[in-house]
Image 1: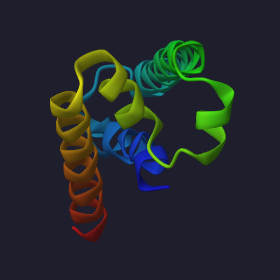
Image 2: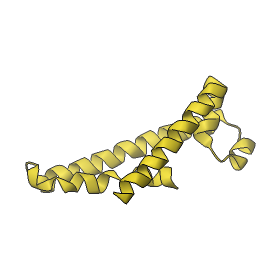
Image 3: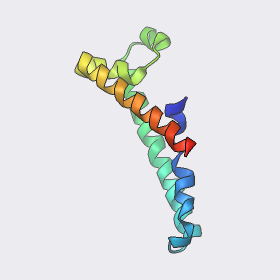
Image 4: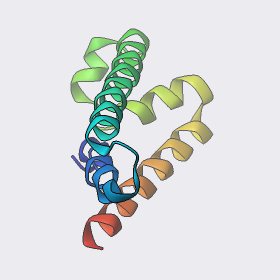
Length: 99
């Protein structure tokens, strides 16, 4: 859940500096729309890649899809690396929300 919500941290950050942005009503709106569309495309492509890489039986029981995909691509070292990166991102998201 934290990895999913991590993508939404940028919304409040984009509006915090509205007084320093030229034409904030237009600029912030465009940034949020294009940023969200970019994230949707990235997640869609990565999800398609994982769905094509991992068999359906494994997908049903998997708890870490990106780590499983990294294991297929890079072996055990890739699995550990992606798992550590995901843990780091989650911990930083909690720190940001706390602050």
